[in-house]
Length: 152
Image (cartoon, rainbow, N blue to C red; front, side, top):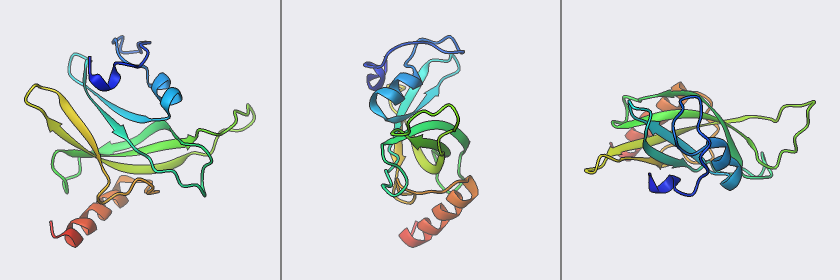
């Protein structure tokens, strides 16, 4: 078992794999994680995504809701961009209304370790944790601008 997942409850899912339940992770710790599976639907790596809390937008911690889009950006090797939807964890459920959903795009870097484990890290050097970037095109433009600024 991957160390990051050892404390999470196992519920299974439509892939019928034995692994952590995204719901239990989200509700228990209000942490956002990206799971990468291998060809056998086994967990190859888990990466934590730290979505910054903008106190002007939400009262509670960001609660990951869904993945809107993802791509491997040509600007950054061994990485991918993910646009995530999140809601305010302090939102009080109301059957008449859906919670407001906010969007952010994150850069996740991938590294294959010698032991075969995939390490996934959230890189905030160009896309800060409180960004409100809602699409991959804008995020890729920001990466190009950042590369010029940083002399990459």
